[in-house]
Amino acid sequence: MWGDIEQYFRSSPKRREVASLFLMLGLSCNEDLKVYCQEIEVPIKKIADMLGIDRRVVTDTVRDIMANDKMRKVFTNLKPRAFLRDAASALNYGVVEIEASSETVGIVAGVSALIAEEGISIQQAVADDPILFPEPKLTIVTDRKIPPHVFEKILKVNGVKKVSIY
Image 1: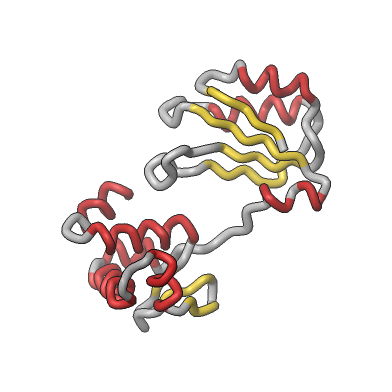
Image 2: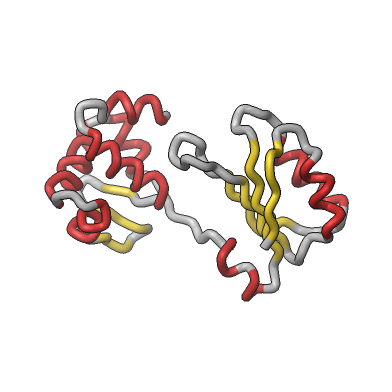
């Protein structure tokens, strides 16, 4: 999908930047040429200000998205999701952040199995898209802190480079 977006916005890096932001934040757009976070309208000017661009670039990006059937199907269906990592300590949850090779298959399965072996429940797992995030991570939020001996096991999962706990 990212290749299609790159190709579609190849003539305008700023519009590609707007489209990337929509993907990262789960912002959608609609036929009315407005941007939404779920059903809440997000002011075009606020998006433009955040990116340091003219608001017309954001509007033109939305117009371009709506003009292309494939882009429209993607961007009208995006949804934001809560990311529990930073709120985990207030909820008495554990957090494991893993840096790994994005080409390696089975990292989520391997780490999840190790956590399950300890009888710990996963509340949330978020894997960053390596194309959208320069330093992608797998973040796993658990129903309680993970014992230190599990981190040694996680480091042995094929493709895992670094493990951080919060």
